[in-house]
Image 1 (spheres, rainbow, N blue to C red):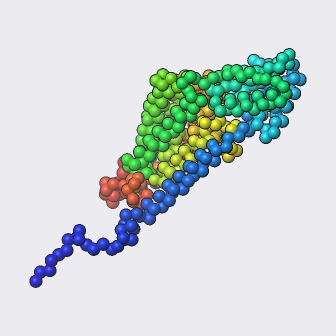
Image 2 (image 1 turned 180 degrees about the horizontal axis):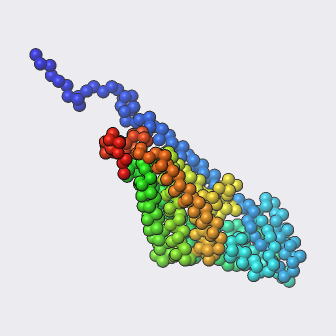
Length: 375
């Protein structure tokens, strides 16, 4: 008698544990643990940077008609407990204003020996929280000497730029676009470029995207929303550099670590870069660690340069632009180097569950068997 055959769908289950092992691979479990670590690092970084802002060595100039008066006042302010101010003497008020405009200092105290009211020059365009910290510190110091202070904002934030944060949010948007564009390029055909041609194409596509994203971001922040003044061309160039630099970093990390590289890019740009960018709290208000790394990372360099372009006629933007250019060059070089090293070995598509050195589509497997170089 013929025995009835059992349908494959009716095969008995090997148990719930086996289902778990089949549904969640070791690779997936490791990636989830990596995401958890990234999430905890995000929480620690942001709260650590922002939970207790404390002024530290805010650069400020002191000017007075008589040099001894300026020197004495600067000495008194520099000796305040906790060293919240880093004082220097300016030749006169005009020199002090130039120092603010050149972003050499964040404020200036103009002393009037003939009266009891001095003037404090601030620049809220460089960050409202920083200007407010200067007002509070200098105001209390003046009050202890029986004097008062009148605040004059020589580089005010635009009416549409709430607390001077538009520059920061614009740069954050550019950064997000940079690493998402690079991630999408990886998802389309494997996390690692198989050859030099593909790496060049990816960098070229990223550059085109960066040019478009830089222009559109500048136009939206400026003419469309009226949130940020300054040169549209200057902001366009900055945006292009920010997007390309972050994208190139992401491509480089993908070349080195495959899909994990996207997480590494987020760790560098978002977890470490955003809290240390000087957005909500400029550098002199951040804890030492974030204050030290901020200027060297793309979000911090971009935010500082954007504020310089918007409110300080581009003064002080050269250094941050060089930082961004260095990231762009380094990211591109590593991306190309990884392509040369892995020539002819395509990477697995992101999210495929395959090992990083597995073919990303069947076509690659067929070409590899024939000794072809996949393009």
